[in-house]
Amino acid sequence: MSEKVADLLWEMLANAGVKRCYGIVGDALNPVIDGLRRNGKIEFIHVRHEEYGVFAAVAEAYLTGHPVVVCGTAGPGVVHLFNGLMDARKEGAPIIAIAGDVETSLIDTSALEELNPYKFFEAASLCTGRLVNPEQARAIVNAAILTAVLENGPTVISIPGNVASADVPDYSSAITIPKPPLLRPSDADLDELVKMIDDAKTVAIFGGDGCREAHDEVVQLAGRLKAPVGYSFRGKQWLEHDNPNAVGMTGLLGYGGAYGAIHEADLLLLLGTDFPFTEFLPGDSVKKVQIDKDPKHIGRRTAVDLGLVGDIKPTLTALLKNVSEKSDTRFLDKHVADTNSFHDLLQHYV
Image 1 (cartoon, rainbow, N blue to C red):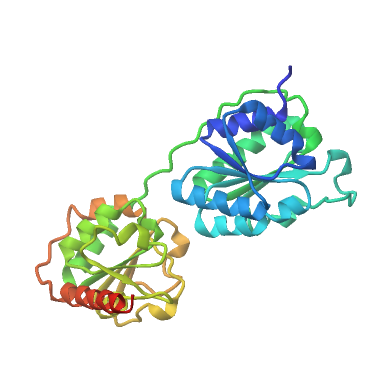
Image 2 (tube, helix red, strand yellow):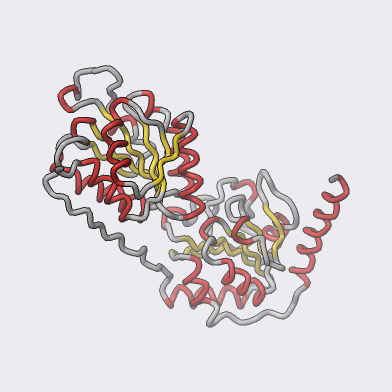
């Protein structure tokens, strides 16, 4: 039997590390799901509503860092994916959406359940491809997978049923996914940061989701600088545990000594956070340094005195080689005590 476009699709997704697909079978999607059955390497999770499926996929992709597929058939099926794909874009989750589409002979005829995937998914998808002939298959699938994995966000592949069931002319399912490069600031920028740290009597750290791979480095730096460590809601899971310098969160869900620590420090290090609640960040009375892998995040929530582009783990690894240890623990002790008082008070009402 000749290999179909649907076979190439699932084989490439399996080779890219996809383990599960969430969704609902139906109509335009039937040839795609039949290819999934033949493949047998990817588990299909049938859900009661496409929106349930996409949010489940986002959760898995966010927590594991591995690409996850979600699917919905033409019309209402793919419309139900939109909210979850927007969530994936905000959360940075590698999601690949397989969207059923009307047959190619019906495209642009206002057929039943037809929608334009480019316009509809424009706000949610980092990359949208529409397969209108089998010759496109490998290139479109390859682009969707690489974009989702390397840019950490949602992509969409829209597939008419007649294309999914067509013979594929080139059945090479190989796909190469390069490892994301490690990014750290230049030595000159790190030297400037070291000087700012050494000149500051007190230092506070506020971290976000960008610290997910850098727990040990943040804790080591905080210990050396006697710095309290606050965190955003998305940074909590990476920075609170096994951290003697943890002082809780600030913002709408704030607690503990975080707010006081970041407002009273001489120098605040913003690590891997694009914290949106600017009213909870200190003003010009506190010097601020922001480190983030995305240059667009630098200085957009609050003015900073120094901005460095880099991943947190390799940046702190390099920084730790040169930064001097501080000895005065009074600033740290005060804000840790404030945090402990909050926990004691909370226990009183539990």
